[in-house]
Length: 285
Image (cartoon, rainbow, N blue to C red):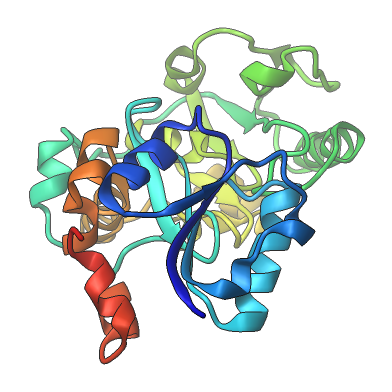
């Protein structure tokens, strides 16, 4: 018999606790093997992050046609905001009203010029990319070597705070605050780090992979050449407003999740579940 909502993860998770206040959900602790979790018995499953165990849950949900809500740390205002998406990390809402963007205090920037090229590192093993430390080191060093061939600009590297020991052969390794590292940058290069969002808000052009949630505002890393580095593309105001309006409607506080405010604006989900019992889930039981 089909049940309603399953939460799979640690009880210490703030967003999962908030979901448990909104839904009358069953909760399975994450130490329980995924093979023992009766995913197929539910009509909606909620997880925190997409690390190894949760990726197995995602696969089973996809096979069974069950929507999976994925939450993680937010894009802006960490750690008070959590991204809430469907079937993947870095999901963005289709909502492009500006009211919530303004509520979050997001200011649309203008292009800010600088001198050096800043490579923004990520945490090895993170679910957003799955690279280990060796693979990331090779990736970043490859970028630095390539950049040396096409520009005389200094190359700086800022490792992820959870991997401060990482270093590459470059002009400077910056282990200081992110905002200070961004301040003097000409442009930034990253795979899909959340710090790319900070770079955009600081007025810095971006080079990234297509898996980044801001990829439409960036230039692909494979297109780094003399022209694109010396005259990097910075998105226009309209595109920035559209993107950050969607970002604002894709992240929520613990209180907003618990109250159900997040669910009231997810038109994509409501249309996806229209005509089914799941449509009732976007209302408090």
